[in-house]
Amino acid sequence: MSTSVVLAILVTSLATFLSRFLGAITSKGVKETSKLFRWFNCLAYSTLAALIARTIMFPVGVLSDASYMSRCIVVLFCLFIFFISKRNFVYPTIISAIMMTLLSNYL
Amino acid sequence: MINKEFFFRGFKSILAPDSPALALGCCFIAIGALLKNLGFNIQESIFSTMLTYALPGSLVMAESLLVGASLLNIFLAVWFVNARLYPMAVSLFPLMIHKSQPKWKYYFSCHFIAVSAWLIMKSNYKSVEKKHRIDFWIGIGCATWTTAVIGTFIGFYLSDYLDKNMMMGLAILNPIYFLCMMVGAMKTIQITASVILGLLLGPIFYFFSPEWSILLGGFIGGTIAYFIGELNVN
Image 1 (cartoon, one colour):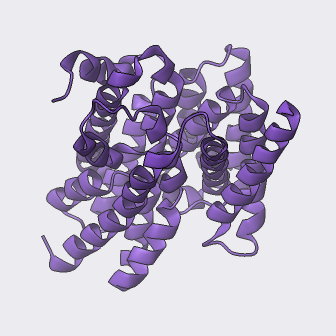
Image 2 (cartoon, each protein chain N blue to C red; image 1 turned 180 degrees about the vertical axis):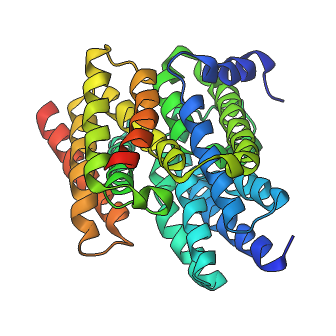
């Protein structure tokens, strides 16, 4: 393994573990019925939603080569499938991959 | 020690019909293929997934290496992207803390904090007695972590057979799955407002500051949602 790649991996894992560990340490004094817990719960859901929206609208990596329209079509169609399939998670997930592969061929 | 019954109950939860294992595995297949294309060998790819176990962080590292960023730049970029793990940990561990459980379990298992495992735990914790929730959580974490490692391994060796369009198909799986899970979790006014505001504010803040958009969108959206929920209760 090349040294620079190993160092980059170690630095990445340290930066990732830091947030997790600090969360575990500081959560000790937080009661699950407290207002602070409810606030952090809101922050967690909102941050995840922001991450998902950013991943879809401003992606990095291979998804950034897919057209904006194809990403929007896949998201809207999969949400439609999610609701008509009585909130089943599996159907929209599988359909999204197939649709994206096909649409990126034609759009 | 870890209670085997609850550990395996957690581990098996990824076999449920609505489990994120499929989406998670497919996304790490894409990561494995991406790392190979960047010049990583199989050991480095597996090592990366085992130690980092966070998709956006791995992507940022890969992109940073590609442009020749310094180690400090990589550290800061990954830290910003993965800072979302902090509120996730604070909103999860109080549900699992029990005085009869040793502290090492909590410190060890914080490595498993990731969107998929967090969402599974959030939707299942009520079915497990509080004393055993940490063992259940370690089971979920081990299962999703194993799925990620296996996905990376498969992706690394499949990369020669995957064209760009198929890689795009794999890459969209995870955000779609998480989006559906978040919409499915919108059962209280606070969570509903949090999700909707996060979805709106994340991209809006991107125009002002791409690096801070997730944290700012999450912080402001979550705080507004909290007050909306509190006012509604009062």
